[in-house]
Length: 321
Image (tube, rainbow, N blue to C red; front, side, top):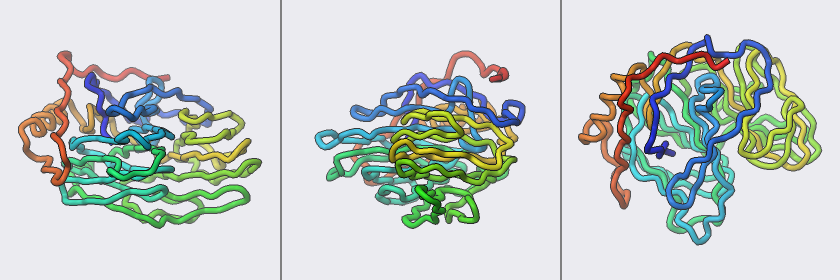
């Protein structure tokens, strides 16, 4: 999914100096963003008070939306660089096309993982004949400097490993959880897992104390480390934890996100991650002149134009807390 904000800002993220090195319970509220005509997303990262969680640099939650009589998701071709996109659905389907020639329909609890590397473009749309409801999350993982120029590629994994306990099924999207490892390619130590809890479940998950973590609520009513987390909100948990207590008051869906704190400072603008304002300026020029990012073939429509860069130069980042 794209960041369609026409007033996009240059944002500096990352760096260990902004990581909370101890356990905390910091509830993040979303910013509501319109995505096309019929889809509104709740943006949790980057957030005013929290820019990244490990290498996770962007989190949108959308739905459940009734799109029976709507076009659903319609995101025209747009570019990415320096990141991986993770498409995750609870309901509906998304048709992915990209400039490497990939064409894939992503369905609930299947991993659509696009590594942009140096440059890629893609489109996302609900198929013309689609399910009534659309509900999911779109997430970005920042690539470390050593890997941010890798060849672009797309992976689709329909079958992912699971960890189970009483009242809990955890599907490992990326990384490793309690010995179960996702087949998705990663470039830094991280974890992404989908947690399905049944009403009345009370359990805990093992965590890595060197990771920082957050939990996104997708549906239902659950308490995370004693804190009620409602759908569309995210609880930042800091570092230093060895386990995560969970309690479900109803059937609930959560996403666990975590990883080693991201060492490098990155610059985000629109759908690009670089290391400097010059990186972003060069990417914008390449996209607007039709070079570097390739062509998405088969999409019925025109690519998205890039927003204008801010007139003022990028300012150094101040501490969040």
